[in-house]
Image (cartoon, rainbow, N blue to C red; front, side, top):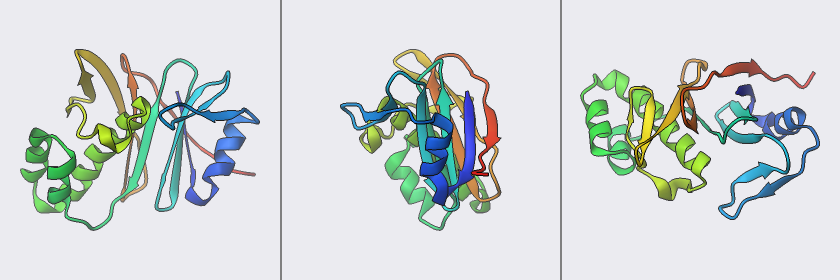
Length: 169
């Protein structure tokens, strides 16, 4: 699976550059897909865009710039109680990054399933995976610049991610 990183302002250019002139249509859920091509998912936040592309499996991706908000309050609303408790148990200085780590996994999951945010809090994230009705969904956390979190989620066993930098030149 390839994951492309690029500037947020160039997200559409990156999408068309990587996927070529493929026809993009919307599924009934509203999730975009390429006709006869690979599965893909796109996310952007702050200055970064992330595009995940896979020929083998359906994929969801999310990136978030860390920002000030009530992390514990938000965690209580959008995560499972045990996930909220894990974040609350951390020193305050580490809670924001951990919240965004969980949030990107959850958002990537609802994007791959096409549920949107109505699918939250979703399955529990633990030990690098989600378990959905007895089936494993694998998670790859992305290596991003300081102040960002990102994750790729796909159903099935762990997958390799080739992280690449996109340039329009």
